Length: 446
Image (cartoon, rainbow, N blue to C red; front, side, top):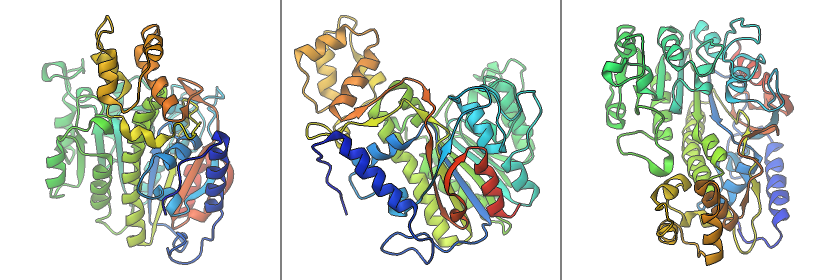
């Protein structure tokens, strides 16, 4: 049932939405999925699909619920809310993605900026390692470069998250990984092939020698016959395009997730798959509500693919949790503006700002081309006087759409955890992020 999006009191939105979500969180776990959206039967899991919407928190949940036009988000529809997760790192109340990813991958805290190692530099085994050692297939999917902090945390050990070429080398050398899909071709090839590697190593060729098939377009991914035992897909020189700007030669996050599940589920011992919606975080850093909602919609397609497989398979645990909050997104919806109005926007703030002439002569024209909002002369003057036109445009659009932000960076608030399928009932209450991989391993019996 489609809910009304016209609320006179802004604060009521958060109360109503959060209350509805808590009701879902503590719904019955027994029985098959039915009209009430109850979880399927609990039990031992053979597979885990771990979905990480980077930077996603309760504010994103509530705003996306108001933005979405065709029913409830899948995590609401299936009563998936289970717990809230604390995100601090070993050395800071506000984590970065490297430390948060390490906690979610290894069950241990580390310092911001470090991946797969303790603060003292000791290498940490990951849940991906444990899955492989127990005969399961493994995979990593992201819309960033595959070497970015979150996917890297499941595969490598480095003291600096910025060691991208070293991360790429460790990923290819890691025999525990069966599938990698994302961006970042430049980090895998030398400079004479258009890359950034100064060591002259062609990691794509090395990967093929180690049994990886290599694909670099959406068509190649869709048509790959699965004959090789491993798969490497690098679909962009750097990160993939934002969902709002999707290129036809790049697969969507949902398409990559479906292909990964299809490939990894071919063997009987089960699999572990991590899927990151990387750019929700980047939208939060930019305070770009349109970017945030369109990339959340793309992420939801991946969650739907995971839930559909869990329904068919019966032995799959689906877990979804952000690594931290980004931007402190809040709901300020009212009669005048709510997130559904973002459907009248058709460009990121950065793209709009890039089209504006230095003398602002076409500012109003650009805004009217890419938004359905009315722009007063006073508003245009405020944009012209801003230190950052991109941020000013994003802030103005957010205000018109009933969205508020408190930061341009990460925050330290707890984030919601959603789970579905075999073992979902193991998640409850408020837990630390280090508990998440431990609970998933327990559900897998490893």
